[in-house]
Length: 624
Image (cartoon, rainbow, N blue to C red; front, side, top):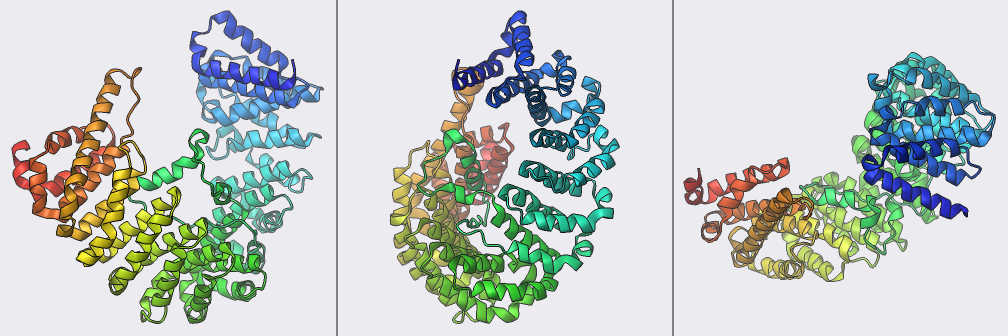
């Protein structure tokens, strides 16, 4: 058959192994294992890789114990004169090391690593770069767990790594860098004697022509900054370090950080893109938010700034000035990123320059390039604390005015960055924002009509944070009139099964707490729906527990967020919540939630019990 058909049949077989291996008749299982080993040296690299996946799938089914000849045979095949056989066996071993590293280092299998690690080390000098790369990758799997067999050979390992430091193959260099970064974390004692040359080497690699190598090397600075010896070993190199890290990386942008994890929303935000079946078709290409060299460099500057504080500035400021006022937008953008990255660590030393820099950054908020506008939002948010400490007319007012315009920007990335930055500003400014509430609410409500799905989630957060920050000052008829209709409209549009309810429920929880009695006209439908969500989730959980093969497990986050909003209502409405509780079975539901297997559900239900006890003890008392 042709290659794609052969590979596909291997993957279908792998899926069957995954699902049903336990029920294969013994001869079938034996036949598959034997065929895998017979064909691991196939002429096609695609087929070798497919067989490797099949082998590790069988091995991870608890079959490493049941397939005692697998590791000895694969290790034996490494000695083959035939390149394909050697490479195929190594590919399979690498996958097994990735999937079963703990098991390999245990007594369960008679400690095969005692043989395997010295064997892998021999192949560091192999003439084929692909095989050298496999060999390092295999050993790398055992660094973080400090596998005994590796620790006994640690000096040989490090020597071999140094020998490959300037290998012509980028994949080999990448694995060398990865090894050194991990060793820095677990065996720094072994690296200290060579630290000076390792730092120089990593500086070169951070500028490697291959971006993947550079990214691995750049992680070194992040890890080094966490080590107590960082300051002592890096001080003499400081001037060198920074220049390499400010290399602009054009179109890629640092993603504005979510500044506040309430309970559920953010976990969901982070979980989503990982699952290929579940990626929503955003027209905003998400590749830009992936980890890349520029973000890694910015993160490294951030941690180094926290280690060196003001001592970093003499090396940095001359470079920074050049970047910040550069005519080329790409370079200017990277300068703004650097300025934001060092904000936390170098704040004291930066204060004298801020009266000149903040107005420049506010000006960058209206730059014609969207990426300059979005990074300016982020960097300004990193200096929000200082802005708020100055007389409001000097910086707070102009910053707020411009940020609100950016919230309505035509570019989605700028909307996201501005909304995120505004939420940070709200947290810092708190009641300083009260005089501008009407103006702020007009903008946020207007954004409701403009935003697409993804940014709506951030908008809810900005509104919730505003409510947390100004508290009862929000309880004015004119503000309520602006804010509540669009929130309630969204509330009515969303179905009970829609995960977009999470951020909206969290937002309403903050709003209800802030508005207090001002929330009364809206409380009935909101209260009812929360009770329904709890009820539905509990019922679904019960059906699932009784018939797991017929029903799906419920997403308990619906219940958690609903319980949290009920807490917000109880806290905001106080004794007014009494008639709502009277007309519902919430106390019965609450008793079930308090016994749930999931700690987050119990946590939210205990919180609600506390709030109901304060608000309407008469309904809690009979259940005590």
